[in-house]
Length: 329
Ligand code: GLV
Ligand code: GLV
Image (cartoon, rainbow, N blue to C red):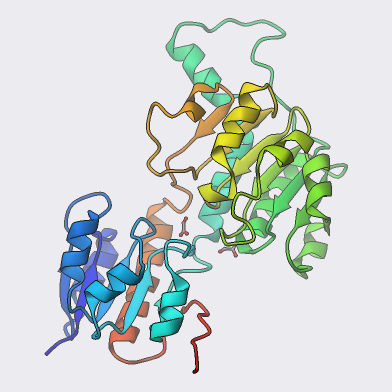
């Protein structure tokens, strides 16, 4: 019997054709737009050999139990895997595939877009135009100039360094790039970026870009105590994961007049309720987790996710596996 693969959403057209043309598998997929409902996911996962999932699909012991003993691989069409309970993969020795590298440019682009949008008050500008509140005055809608500013990057990985590279020309020769991360990054010297303590980064940066993965160390790393130490006109941008910011604290800080402006591609929860308090602040710009959302990038991500799931069900090593450190006991 051909191995069964569950795909939790329809892929970009070329990738969908690619997976449908794999003759040695039986493909089952959820054909509606938007995340597969949990009940449906548990039901369709039953007995499958491989799962190609999205970052909106929680992969935990309940789901893995529902799939059962045939399951040989889970392949997520995302670089991040905070929606996956890795300890279960460790226990069960199931490989997990993800899609690193191919979304770096797209996410770095949207990070820069949010920095500029926040610095130049684009959301307020759009609103003023739409509401007929457009005036011209030497002091109206003044934003922040990036020239000579200090950019702080949290997580100088692929996305963080691509972001630094893009922002460098905006700050000019007298601007500064600093970063915080667990380890010294060799790429830093070519970017002219200096490693600093987290506390230094939040105190000295004019612009802070969150570009790190969400994990136990980074969860709610940005909270009220941290916001208090930031410059009063800081630009804060998060294109990584919503959970890195304690969002209630962010709303509190904003309501107390702290922070300059904020740009977010990721929030908690996703999708955000349109009545969420976060959206009441004019200086917050939220976009709907579209960092990797270009046809080119999503196609590359989907193709890698396909390679991963097909390799897994064929019993081959995944080309792009997350390091799981299987229990060897
Ligand atoms: C996007 O957020 C991803 O992790 O791929
Ligand atoms: C994620 O892909 C990163 O390394 O920044």
